[in-house]
Length: 273
Image (cartoon, rainbow, N blue to C red):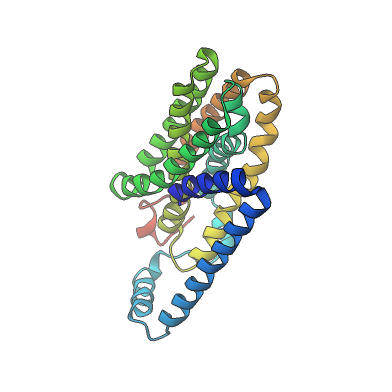
């Protein structure tokens, strides 16, 4: 997922320079249609209600049934859910602001188009790596330590962008991009892992869709809050990012101390909220 952006980004840039932007979009769109058509064919050929994999999933759900929350409204009344939701919104706001304004932030250092492209590819690449890395950490360290590492990473990345603007350093800026991209991948993978662990698998598809609304809100909130700061320069924008990550630390503390449903602690009590 992450490295695809760097490969496709480089391809689009080359096609644009040779044939123009409309032709570049046409080639990428045609390739996407071919990939989707091939994927549909493969899934249609392999999907079957008698597939052993489907039976295994059913067995897993049956074994896990005592841990389910059958009423989605109970989840939505859980303080723990909302602490996590708000935490994800704040950190995703920081990441999406950087992603959407990568060109403007890099341009503050008066760099060329090639450097801007590398910066965008760096964020996407580390995003992909972060999904794998934090997936492993979530399995080994569980939720509290993993969330703390992600939050600390966002704080360090924001500090890095602030230092890059102060020092006019492209190397420090790219390092900040990498750390933020890495940790944003962690937020996205924790969205699925945490919701599954905390609220069970029976209605996971619906619950996962609800938690992903945090990304939609963050896509508006990040640019809305930080873009005005960017107009005043890269330093104020980076400083505001640091403030958001500090607020996220407070929300994370509330999540850890929440008296609502928490992973692994209330399961044996019959999932009481």
